[in-house]
Image (cartoon, rainbow, N blue to C red):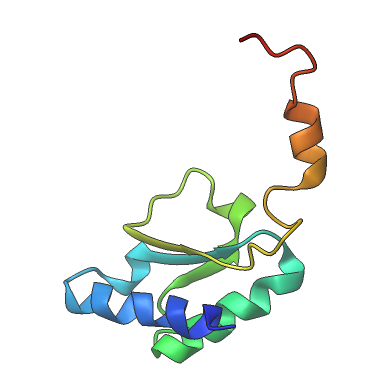
Length: 92
């Protein structure tokens, strides 16, 4: 899996293009996988400068560059949310 290095590599060109590291966010679905986002920010050398959090805490915040990580099967979207949103009577 190259998720960490790929997301880490996203931050450095953004900073080179003039984006302040505080305008970069790396987000995951669940607290159990936040270590993956932290590892990516460490790989970029910007560990203490980019936002690393779960998605729910990012609501209402604005970032110019966003990496969404740990979107493994059955993680995003949650199966229960899909079932709740499903329309039993679709109109065509």
